Length: 175
Image 1 (spheres, helix red, strand yellow):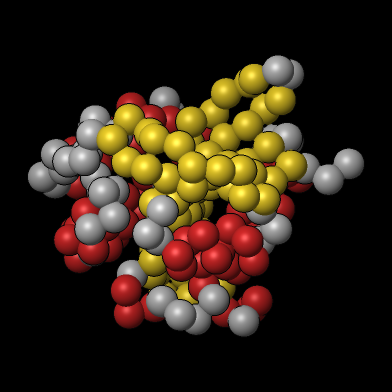
Image 2: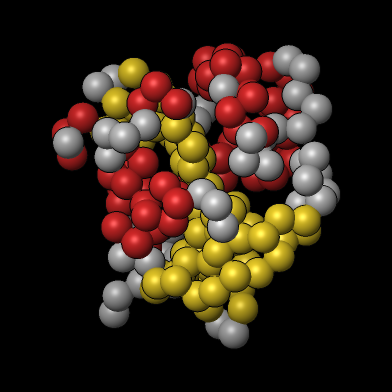
């Protein structure tokens, strides 16, 4: 499995391809209270990415297309960067097209992103939030060595659901 899953940095010239993948999976993403609000075209997606990451250097280091056997099938990346108590941390997000689920793709993609986050970006702590009812996502976190921290409510006003109850998982950089 390891050689079949790769992460391709999201570059400016790949935005249109990724936007098509998002469109195809829009209903599926919204079923988890996620998604990409108010995106009507590729330019909207471009502006959304710039708002989150600021520039493309940041984007290429922090957001990736998941490929399985060289076929783009989802996204994984980092957001919500902060320094808290001298700890550099970020949240991981991921999703994979429904037809590619159950193959260990997200677990392997998450393992690759962990390595990149700790070794290249120098982060100290990573967090995964998943809906309480999203058992598959919780299992990904556990398979990747994350520790269950508890349940909390997140304000998610940019999406259709305003508050969502999530489980939080964390993993720290090994010294």
